[in-house]
Figure 1 (cartoon, helix red, strand yellow):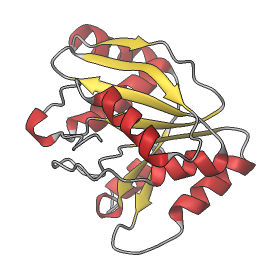
Figure 2: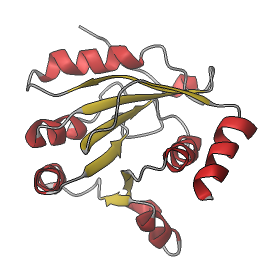
Figure 3: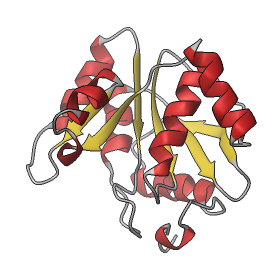
Length: 185
């Protein structure tokens, strides 16, 4: 029932479509960009529910206040303490290694504001756990959710981050002025 409702809302009522050619393995990281609005969360939740897939996500801890904290955790939310240096990357990589299934969505920009210095955690979690990064883009101009590329990190961070950023260069976020990939060398 929920799957049909979310599918109807996203694809029929809101007019979105998907271009997803990469299958979902048992373990993966989703790199989701651009992230320019809180609407991205709603679109993502409608998409995962309409596809019948549960995917955890990282979110700044400030959102985990009562009663929203319990709701976000029940939806798969993992709070991030950005002001503390924790071993979250190592902990998540270890969790991915020991689990039979691991599905995590991360917005590499780490903010809804313009940021050319993308976070590296998603890359290093995938590298340490030897799992693929699926490149999902949300394009508000085309009303399209797209994933046509994935990669398994090799450790050549600069080369592969360039490849990842180039994948997203033409996507239009809800607030396109808030999305930048920075200089690609």
